[in-house]
Image (cartoon, rainbow, N blue to C red; front, top):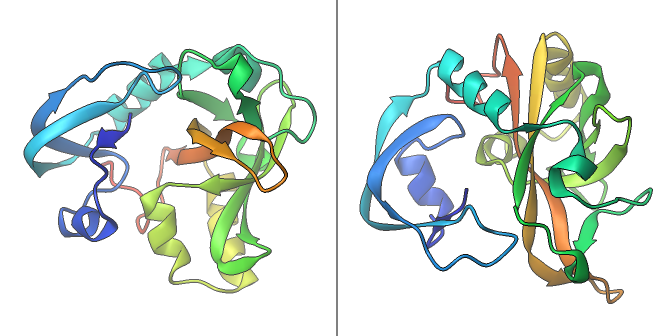
Length: 204
């Protein structure tokens, strides 16, 4: 789900909003345009009501889980493709995938080492390489680390966990410099259980 208008990063930090946070506010639906059918408007002020309980959070993730990316979005992804063309617009913009902890790696962006990307394989074995991470918790963490040792610490932690869930989402319609137009894959969240990386997550 995306909240509109977008919350500035400094406002998220002021409210301590990280993935897993419970928010209170006046939320309403808007005219639905596929694929972003989950969007919600909010009016007035938002307030932070604390972290979601881990048991509740994982039940929500399991309830929205898809077997793999292609079934979740009802499209085919040729090897290396990172977008869904506009002529095959799906009816949703975000899905949940359960992935093997050893099939996911956080890596530095080769063009900007202060940013991070993710490589992972879904349960069908389809690999998605160097996807952007829009997760605010990871962005906050990326600002603090600039070397491979720190990425190793994070990846080792992820691989030590029993369960890992990826929230795989779609960008707004975008045309790349080479002329490809569509909705680009992005990782909106990465969640680990039974433990979470405290600098990134907000469930308890």
